[in-house]
Image (tube, rainbow, N blue to C red; front, side, top):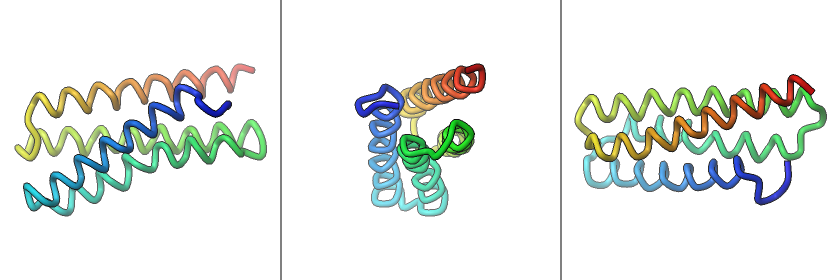
Amino acid sequence: MKDGNVIKVKSMEFAIRIVEMSRYLSERKEEHVMSRQLLRSGTSIGANVYEGVYAQSRNDFISKLSIALKEASETQYWIELLWRTGYITEKEYESVQEDCVELLKVLTAIIKNTKEK
């Protein structure tokens, strides 16, 4: 994986959105439990992608990106829960959900392609 790689960029941009959303939820909506869970899982995606850059082997790389994939799936859950409980609007939900689904697709493709090599 090279610096400037699409998944690195997308996971960092997503993490920034998640930090901003978590801050908004904590400060404006006074919601702390779900926003912390969202913050933890949403920022962990990029952290695991970045760790994958220095993986010791192909299996280690697949493992790091698989963890990122699981964290993206968990993040998707928290986003939906926040929407269904009225903490974020449908428009906010659709926007961030779209980015999360894109990350899930890219991570899945990378893992699949790496396994096939």
